[in-house]
Length: 271
Ligand SMILES: NC(=O)c1ccc[n+]([C@@H]2O[C@H](COP(=O)([O-])OP(=O)(O)OC[C@H]3O[C@@H](n4cnc5c(N)ncnc54)[C@H](O)[C@@H]3O)[C@@H](O)[C@H]2O)c1
Image 1 (spheres, rainbow, N blue to C red):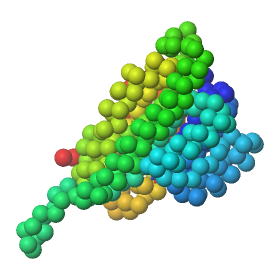
Image 2 (image 1 turned 30 degrees about the vertical axis):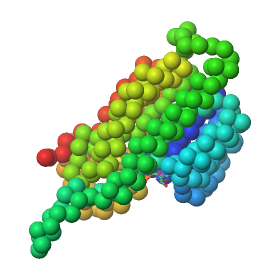
Image 3 (image 1 turned 90 degrees about the vertical axis):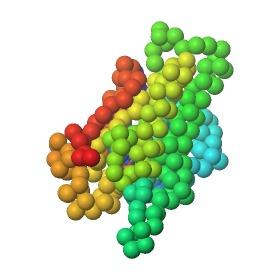
Image 4 (image 1 turned 180 degrees about the vertical axis):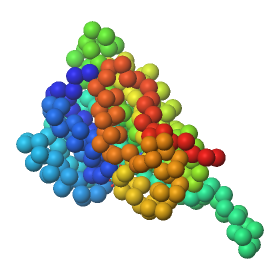
């Protein structure tokens, strides 16, 4: 798929994999990239990226991806600015790790993972990416309706693409009951959106990265990384965010990509 003159949204773009994806797209000739994050660091990130790009390619939006009003306002603004949003990489995500069931050694009482924490991980990691993706597809669907064109025809070439960010944890990972559940849920969303969105000329894929050297993983600390992660990784190192971004850009660009890419660094955790 030709990326030139396309427009897109990247959430979680102030940091880690989202930011690296913004950087990796700099030379692709896109018309505009909306960079969304709840952190004000997104302003600085766009400023730096635009200085390097030599133009106003990156547009910062500060807000919580789970907030519907915020999401709608971003898309209203983007529709005014660009008409349609061809691509979406909803990368904002969080971890709230803990064993699913713990036993208090003294009392023998069980302590289950908090429902509130679980709901917030679902809101951010599962519902939000699906809705940001659907909102992007909707701009393409509305545009086709306005132009009076119906079902997408292969002769038109593929018009847009979504890349959801899964994780190796989607296959199950100790201590990650909420995170793993949300990332596995994205597989179902991807498979469904892939089948529906092609009607509007949009592909939908998912990438499952292994442990990547970003603030999310750095927060685990060196001991955890060295003892629990690297020994279970064939590559024996964390992935770099730019390596994951390269996989994401490949999936955006390749019209043949419509499924999942396991960019997993050889992750093979012991049970
Ligand atoms: N780092 C890894 O090892 C790894 C591996 C597989 C998948 N992932 C996934 O990649 C994505 C990016 O992770 P990362 O490692 O770059 O993390 P990161 O913490 O470096 O970046 C995440 C960004 O998302 C933003 N964000 C979080 N919640 C938000 C919200 N509610 N609204 C708006 N912005 C919000 C944060 O402010 C931050 O800038 C996540 O979906 C994560 O689950 C990461």
